[in-house]
Amino acid sequence: MTPSAGASASPSRTSARPPKTEATKAPPSRGSFPGAGNTGVPAGAKLKAPSSTVLRVQKAGTVINGVDIRADISVEANNVTIKNSRVITAGEWGIIQRANVSGLVVQDSEIRGDGSARLQHGIFNLGGNITVLRTEVSKVTDAITTSAGLIQDNYLHDPAYFDGDHTDMIESDSGPGSGQQLVIRRNTVVNTLDQTSAVALYQDFGVQHDTIIEDNLLAGGGYALYGGAGDKGSAYNVKVVGNVFSREVHPQSGQFGPVAHWDEHGSGNEWRDNVWADTGRPITP
Image (cartoon, rainbow, N blue to C red; front, side, top):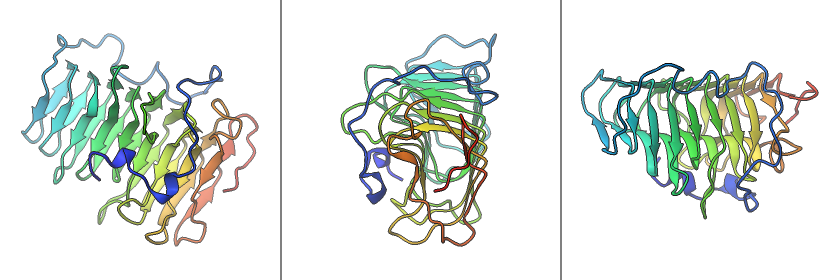
């Protein structure tokens, strides 16, 4: 991945229409899925005075707790934790894990654009595994960009559109590294635009593989889910199980439908128990 990866063209991103900037209707009840009340900075948490200085983390094992920052956080060491914190900024990223670094944990935090300039990536991973838990991300082009790690119990919603954007709330540009996997579990992921996706597995830099997408609420974009097929080879070990596709943004979940680029013949791929939110009826890719 490169800093401009979220806005690059690829064969699986060509079917988008001009985007809207707002949802067209109020969302229905989302049941027990994550939302504003159980993600982000916990109620009662004390934040430090806001800072506009870029925070570079260069010591392994550092814990960042309770910061309120109007700049980005650059993680340049292994096993860093960011929790109970707020990042409001513009530019290429809110939080970045640099290449050759692994183990970043972001939990119980809020990341969003400033509303006036583009924030390309809320969380941008150029390194190894990351973990993102109970975090709220909004007003961005791409909420979380990673090919490896655990993305669980987050609320990703209401992106902000700027000219030329390809908007994905969770985006993977290739399969994970050797011995790694990507798990996207129990998130609420709502892209209120006409493009591109709620969750996207692209083949910009390699074949998609070893990814689990399960028990999420998905809605919006051109398609709510891009399933990993592409021109670099057959996706494999991609499992999409138990997800709920909402019509709260578009009648077909995405502008054009719930899913595109699913590789039904890939070895180990599994599509099972994915249903419509309003009827409970199964979705066939």
